[in-house]
Amino acid sequence: MNRLPKYVFIAALLGLAGNVGAGPLDGLLGGGSGGKEIDLGGLLKSAREAFGEVKPEQERTIGREAAAVLLGAVPLVKDEALQRYVNRIGYWVALQSERPKLDWRFGVLDSMDINAFASPGGYVFITKGLLLRMGSEAELAGVLAHEIAHVVERHHLKAVQKGARLDLAVGLAGTQMEGGDREKLDKIAGGFKELYSRGLDKEDEHAADRQGVVLAARAGYDPYGLPATLQTLGAMNPKDGALAFLFKTHPAPGQRLDLIDAVFAPLEAYANQPAVKERFLREVTAAQKRGAFEDPGFRLNAAVSPAAARYLHRHD
Image 1 (cartoon, one colour):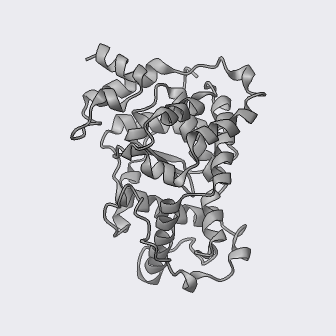
Image 2: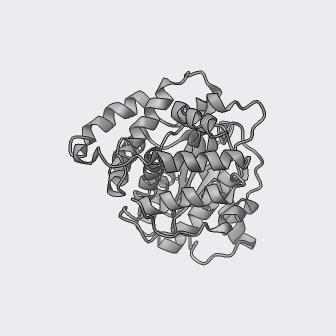
């Protein structure tokens, strides 16, 4: 793990939000659709038959619209070095998955809420609020691996299809972002807004946890990174507003930890793999000094993990 493959941060990711008309969403999409179902009946041909017919170019188109929903609500942190670092880690972990050839892209969202998201086609995002509560690169790799697992298993595509909200075989490949196709894609974006607001099934979240620790281990990291992050979140005040949306859309951290335990017997042999704390903390420190995490009323001590807080204060 001393050398990671070269990965150039794809600047085009910064422009994805331009197609979404929705303004900032309540609590990072937590506002949902106001209890009103999104009518996508006009797009539906045969939801049962559609799955399995989704071509890579269709998945990319759908994923781009879903990613635009997230970026239309909350922009990326304006720090290219930080984004490049997270992309390097995420891309390396994604290469260990069953879908290494996807056009993987990773980003840090400029929100102090604690959460992470994925979109079809290889888009993965974490919030800066979650990043600042980590203490090592293994924790970052573990969280990204969880989201990568969602993409690999097509959990979001299956969820929208299961809900009969999209027809995934409506000829999206090669569509232009204008005219009737634009209207079609806007409806798809609306469907994903609803999905992100309510979250995936708990079974999908648990499956992504189990696969995530395996992917992190394959990438050469301490597989306990994801459990360490879940322990940190579980120790926080459950009434903390930064956790509200995460707890709404994910199982409780304690429950997730209990189900992850079943995976660790065969992973014990990899428990001595590096957590890579120093490099992670060095990157966080540098981003902090560049002003990447400035936030009104934001206190560094309260926002980062204890280990990161001590490190940052030593290097002020």
